[in-house]
Image 1 (tube, one colour):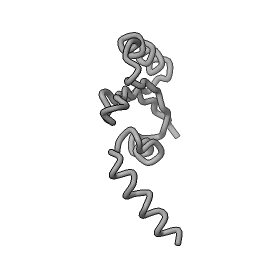
Image 2 (cartoon, one colour):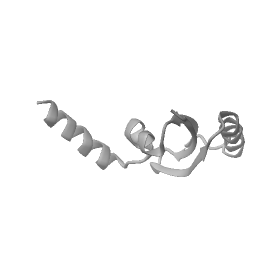
Image 3 (tube, helix red, strand yellow):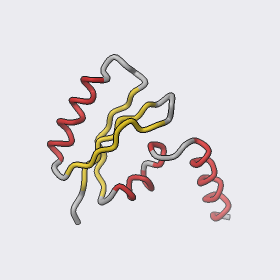
Length: 85
């Protein structure tokens, strides 16, 4: 399975992604992360991460907080609770 590397730049207070960029090579993704951290180093509200997954769809499932608003996360959580019985 080919894994992909995703740079995410996330504005915490706004709950929104500023950047999502895919890289095939991990070292390139990490260099992009360091560059983004340098750009945003004086803004503690900005989170910069590199995540690895088989696809962006997998990231949406495993790291929903970056892709969904609070209401969507709460609704999904309630559905999971109901289904669990």
